[in-house]
Length: 356
Image (cartoon, rainbow, N blue to C red; front, side, top):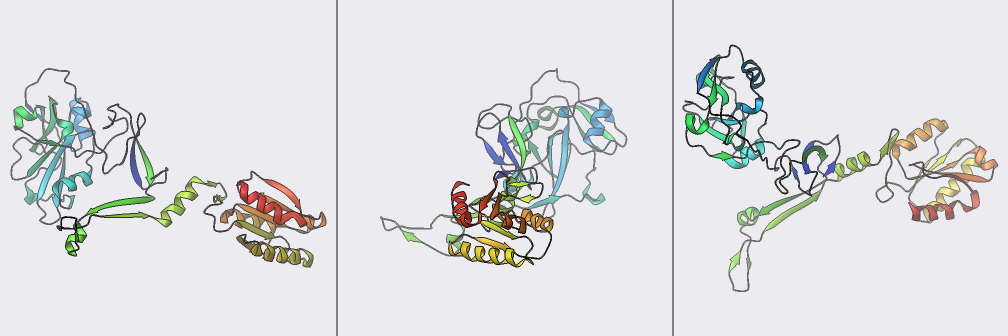
């Protein structure tokens, strides 16, 4: 993974140790401290308060003391099920699908479902499967939906008011969360690009193809497979993200499409064009990878295009340089800018290519 603000993935890392994981796989650890006595279980009128934020503001309760309902349907059957989670957290749907071993989608709640959208709670929620995220374990005095329009409960205790419950990790890891490895409250969430990946395929395909090998005891087994890949397009984009300036990419020499960009400024000048043509042939004979720009365009246009291509070394042949008997060498990262005698240009380039 390459950490970058333009990445399409969320990456969880620890500031204290070397833990790192994709958001889809990162464990969410929540510790709830009991700081108050258990309160009575009461139904409260909450008119038009459908979001967890609105309800908590109306009841003057912190959002961490709320039990949020998220409703899904199974793709195969369209059966409804509800996941209850602490109000400040979000569901990690990949974890949920892995637990269920089937695909799901956010529910479309109809009148026929019997679900009071915006007012859903675990107490007396019938005919719907229920799952609890571990973030709710041990919290007393929760607020939750009353399964009745415009009503919520306060003082809800899962063990007392719902019954025995099993808890699972369905939540997304959060910034500042607890690291599963070092147990410090030091998680950071960043954006990233997936450059390479590994799929642990096990025996899924070797079994389906009836592929076997025989061990030293003569017993047949299915080989274990793995799939490993680097995304070439993603790799190129990642390199550009890591090596660029305001004018375009700055390709590292190891992956640059060319090593040298030969710019013939004023290709309509016979003296300049003749020298540039010969230098181009000479560079190729030296096995130096070179792109040659001999368009009859202004120097500004030529150099702007060269910046966009991002070739590591630029050689400029121009009437002014030719009058001085030299050529100009400039690196794309602007760390080198010098004039070299025309007869020494190939030697100078070879030396520079060994240094950058």
